Length: 224
Image (tube, rainbow, N blue to C red; front, side, top):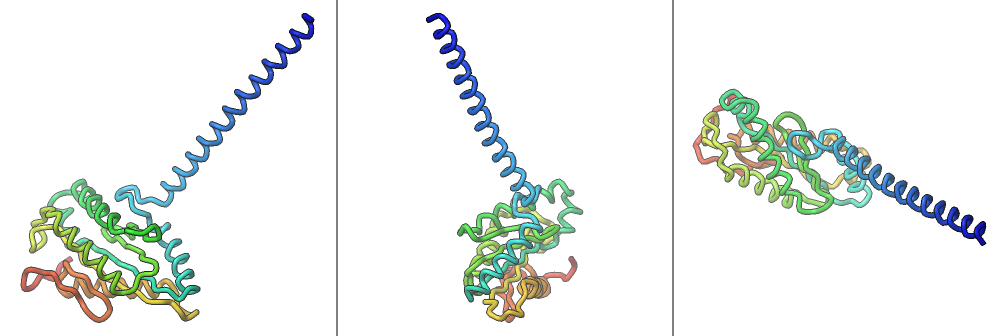
């Protein structure tokens, strides 16, 4: 009886030990998954604004472009540039410039209303918003809401004739139904529209054929 009791005690102890080890392994696996998810998120995230970074945008653009091509759906792209940002850094310093970009980044992030939308920092003071299944009218509406929200923040900027930080925005959207269509065409078209917005006086939204001007002065200087 003593031997049986001893063996039973040893077996129960081994079972409890194995159970604790298994629980630790499960917890370790969960922690490892969380770490991997965090690393993956950080690898795709811009450290300053919290938006997606350029690499993530490029990958998403290719995926969404191919998906739009298969489904013959429109794909919209918004390109945003902060007006007179070099002057802002010169006047207020780079720390203030970084904080300015963070605030604008929050406005841009808020414009993403659907799970498939993607906002990213394209480079420097440029940001982009990728809008799957969105036509030109829809993309223009999102762009105008961003432009108005940035101006409404009222961030002081004496280097801007309007006295506050503003943005210029270029928009493009089309259905890539032809196999020869490439994602770069969407980017180039939005970039040209952005250039048009800046050439036309800044603080406005432009697309290929027109601009939605919101400038309150008669003309703005052409310096960058």
